[in-house]
Image (spheres, rainbow, N blue to C red):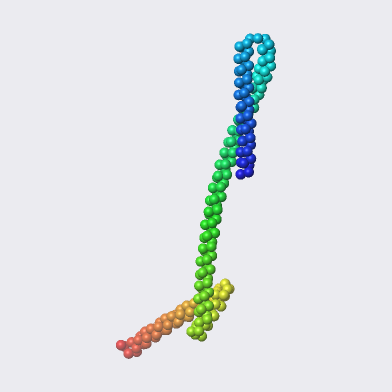
Length: 208
């Protein structure tokens, strides 16, 4: 922004110089035209001698001032283009800044909402546990269950140990049930075989 203001000040100063040179060129052209008219109208040598230095001086200054004016116009044009580009860049940057600022505001509001929601949920859970733990109607069985649950859920290690214990317990129960079912099947097979042998023995002995 400071650079743009400096460039605008420089453009303003150059425009003043250019306008001053333009006025000077116009004045010189007017003086030159008047001198030429006077020279043509009088035709006298003395007048020619007097006006010739002015004419030569005006003629020599005119190209210099015209060239200087042309350079100033070019510089002013270039500076105006530069200032225009800088202003466009500044507008683009301001637009990006506003966009990022709006996104940051939305992000902060979302974070605050999530933090407030988590805090409320945590307070509700803690309040419920405190109320449940401090209840006078809680029986000894409930207190033991609550303490065991707190102990199990206190750390990842205790949860892992409890999970392993449940897994081993289920495996043992499955093995016991399988062994019981296998023994029952063996006993049924043995009874069936004994009954079959007894029946065969009776047929062999008594012929029935």
